[in-house]
Length: 582
Picture 1 (spheres, helix red, strand yellow):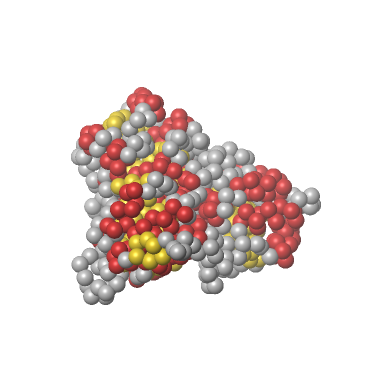
Picture 2 (cartoon, rainbow, N blue to C red):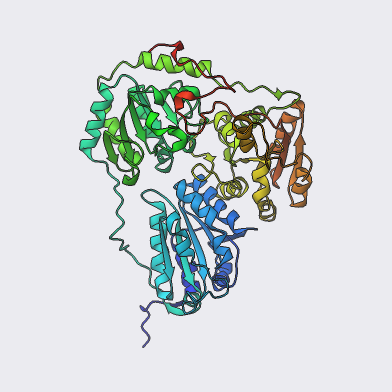
């Protein structure tokens, strides 16, 4: 008599798809090829997992990132061995630096051929070792279920990040009993979730003793979705706060206590809030060089509380007085419990000083620069007409900084950008992934003419898969941020930054060729008209080109390698820090 309790026999490819279904995957971005091909047969028959055929593997990785950032779930990309896998590397590195949970599944040559320089062989596990949270090389069909379950657990817990699962072709085609692991056995991976009560009490004491405290809020607050807890902390303490580039939207910009974004291109009030603070309450930030400027001059009078789920970040760049390791949602909630009802310091003079900076140096974009459109005005109007509920993905460069200043950041979890890696080409596929994850929401991509030319082929993917994103191309005919540096620091010698892209390529025609609607605005009067038209179109992707002045610059700016105290609000013009005495 047959034993019906025995595990069912599946090929490795079938086991892979079954495992992906069991961990809740609903979409994969990928491209098939020889080594991964066995997986595509059962994948094509799955009723639960949608596969979106991208036009380049880099697009698959960034789309997985955009999906993960918009939904809070683990994004998935898939590629074959060799060049297919190596084309994922930029997106994997991007996810690693920005702590984005993705799982990259790659095919590999047969286990007997590994190490022989076989056709389309690349040691993708070795290549990505420094830029993944963990990686697997699976050579047996029976090991696939446990590898997938572990990969998704590792990617989405603790400090999120990318995990690689590389599966040899013989593992995919051979068969084995399918056994789903009910428990995970990861003895070396136990993230600290609960903060230590003693450290919470020490932090509270330090907060009560401070006279110029600042909440320095980083992307970790977004990862832990600690928005309500942060809002409660601000309400209890009335302490001013800043949000880094990765944390935009974690706290409403419209709140009077929000001093903006710190850093090289941050708000003057936010830079002042850090530089002149006597206590930095650091929540999920990592003292990145773009925030600190010259490190030994950063916040010279401040003590530091540093809360992070990753103990490796605490004390890495800046000495810490009170370290707290734990999930930020729980950490901030615990801090609120201790501080609620306590007699805190009088921060009114500190708030008044920063509010004056915020008012005095608030950005005020004008519609034109010279006789051409101002890029700042264009981005501001996109935000005003689309509203705070929209999702915004951006490329890298000047348009990224203008967007970080001028979009409406009053709702959390709606901002996607490449912060750590600064990856040009991120915008279009990330917007695509976000729209797949949030199909009923408005998704804008704000890109530069340089970035857009790197990954715009994914518009074809969007057109063929009914993914109606909207892309604004801020066309200043140059690699704008590099040109700005050449203007300021290289005697206006513009070596290889002029893209000649005001007419070549013709972006609206290019968009139309790829199945999207192409629009263009060159005057102030046309700006609202084309944005309104783009907002009306929801059955296809839309590309709107805005022809803007090529010498518009991002201000404020802290020149590289200098102190944040040297921030400029225009060329050769610095704020007067002493206008208001604390």
